[in-house]
Length: 157
Image (cartoon, rainbow, N blue to C red; front, side):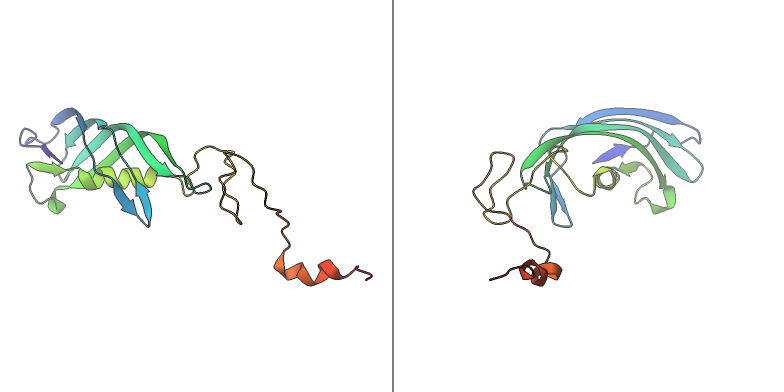
């Protein structure tokens, strides 16, 4: 996605851009980030001597996968965007390519551990039942493997 900057030739010029646009789903380190609704961008672009300064907001909705229960859930996206794009790094001085800027800002806003809700119970490690939907019949008796020998220490059989 490109924004035309041909009307920002003068140093100190400003352009206000408001647009809704489709953005493709993408993967990052085996994590799928889904986007099924258009994103809303409201940004001011300032022309400085050596760069273009972007300042604004990005809103939308992401589809993420919970780290505990592996279910997909919707997550609201509301980002403040503050970027500087150097003119010497641009392919064309009349067009600003936004896809990488938007993708990077989305990735930086994601939590390390995505959770569908704070009290997510996850899945049973034995049968795979989603514990948010109901309990399973597995007997979960966890013993630290480093202390497994001690569990039989007081048996008198």
